[in-house]
Length: 315
Image (cartoon, rainbow, N blue to C red; front, side):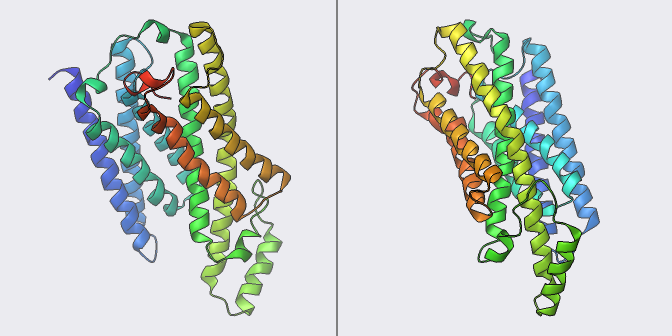
């Protein structure tokens, strides 16, 4: 059994673990009360999958002699590992089973796409072409994928916010100051109001959940946006060294700029409070779909400097 077969076997194990973890999270979500054992099994499963992905990436680095970001398969592995790592931290901080029920299936889809869709030839490491034999490869692509992972999670939280807050306008108005939690006095006031108004106590729990989702989506997108900016700038510097031009307006660069503008608008609206609540969540949710167009969609066009990315490098 050669290394490629071992790696393929490990990747299939990761897919199986993520599928198992997804089922665990969905079963636990369907229960009225949290089942501690199920949550623990899900967390341990994610940790194991994360460790295997890390081992695969490090092994490819050692075997190939360069950081494993040179083709679509490697970028999908790295993106999956980043998403899992960030999620594990987020789960520890929030202790919210709902986020895992939404995010783990996304990582499962990425793993399935990389293992079941891409041919064995596309999954193999190959010598770098001259244009990719640069330190800017690691800098540019890693920052872009780090930004994608954080922005994807932040946007998923925005989508979750919209789903939970549908037809609940009063709740979205309470979640404006995302960088600080609601003061205890305000929470006590709303709790009293909910109780004295004969509204279900679950509504107060929903209020706190919306506050948490709004808070974390703002923070995570705020982290991903500088990474996206650095990734675009480093890509421009690399392009100038390799091809003599900072910007060529090919589809990938154009959609990277569109992605940057969408999240810049989101952050501007949050900071200036021009839009709040559902309106900013809609902006953040829009970014989720734009990222996937930028990351994968434009590569089907087969045009521009990044057109070779479907077979060589995708960022």
